[in-house]
Image (tube, rainbow over all chains, first blue to last red; front, side, top):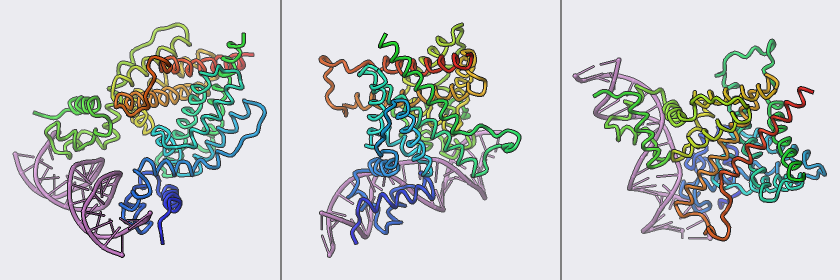
Length: 196
Length: 196
DNA sequence: ACCTGAACACCGTTCAAGT
DNA sequence: ACCTGAACACCGTTCAAGT
């Protein structure tokens, strides 16, 4: 039967989840789809574009409409969803960061737009809402990539003995929320200044 | 004559500056040093460790002592220096991001420490000063990597025609300062709350 | 239109053996 | 101690040729 883009992206996501981004190669993907590597290049211009499609698949659950009247809450919900989506796949944060940097993920761009609208509604000047939105995304991607790589080293048993009883070693989710609060508060301050 | 770590790191930096991170391979580095690839593995455990050493070299100018009594100013100076150091080398931000993620750069860790001290002095609770510092670093690395990749696409002539006269297309430095201001203001708000 | 075969030009890493 | 030679097990991408 014919090879479709969806099959390719699905299989790529499966390899990602089971073996991580280092094993997500064009050759391996082709092998598991029982085609020749060259076949993939009929459907995708290059590896970056294919990874972009995988990133968009990963981010699908983070792209559902957010209906909250409060801009602070809207930022928090979108970022929590984004983080959840990234943590749901092995090396998810790394994959999406790379695709975002390469400009190959339409979904991240969508999320940036949503955040920019929230920033605008908060009172950030129009020409600053984009930078504010990107600042948030840099943070979420950086923090989540860091958290995820530590998690994965941890289950691999490569991290120094954590005293799991004595020192509960700070729930990473609360560290994430704190960093995000910094940004939300900063946006509130900037808006207050441009109003006055 | 003998091969020393310094020679290796210097040549690696030269390749980085001239051809970018994609061409900074162990084999090419060895070739330009007139040695066999295997020779590099006598001096470095693996490629990640070597890249970490290059990252530390890149960050040297950003690690000089900052003597400013004001914590806001100290954060601004350190981040400006960090950004300058990254922009001074082709793909500098990408290199340092990767080394930071892999935990292979002592210099970034040092910068995180300096930022954490500034946050503590601002009045952030001790257990939050680390997360606050890392939030800043995620931002600087993300924003600078983005800026740098756009710059490099630009000189390569791959970007859509910028109307260089009509729309001066927002000085990237000011976008950077704005994002940083968000974080500094957020830190000020958090400290004010923990005092009250 | 869609895919194979086969090649091109590479990678990082290891390790016995040499000096 | 420091490095070579040679191998192992791979990469991404292209493209004439087949169906």
